Image (tube, rainbow, N blue to C red; front, side, top):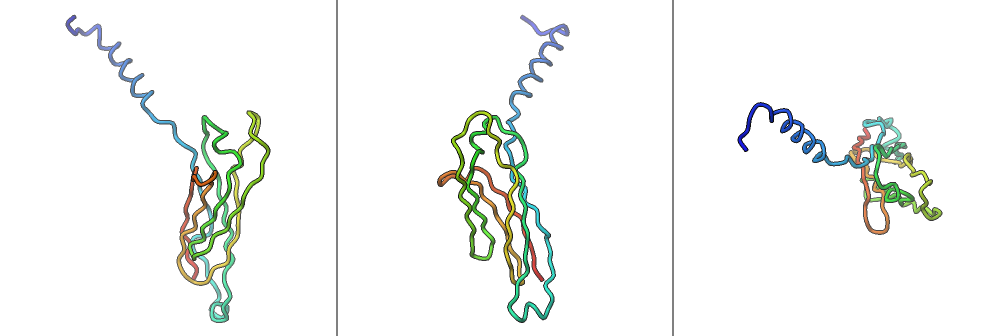
Length: 137
């Protein structure tokens, strides 16, 4: 069958439908927030004191499979050679359970630049992670 002008709208709709179905589902992402630059009083740095940094994280976005984001353990890598691990103990998942979306922790730093990473894990598998850089002067 030869192509003619009457077929143009049908082909255009078929192309749009195929393009829409080819767009991948956006996965949830972990967004970290902390003051990017903090000043430590000069006398305190000389005495070995550090600066307290409060970090918050938010799991943003929806998932078609909330069970895969339910009751994840937290591994905070502070970028200075130390880690904090928070293992969660939760009831078994059922369809009505809410997933945890907000996370907070605190760490003390000496002057320098650090990449703070939070990984949400199940077993030995990282489900999602986020990173933020901070500088202490």
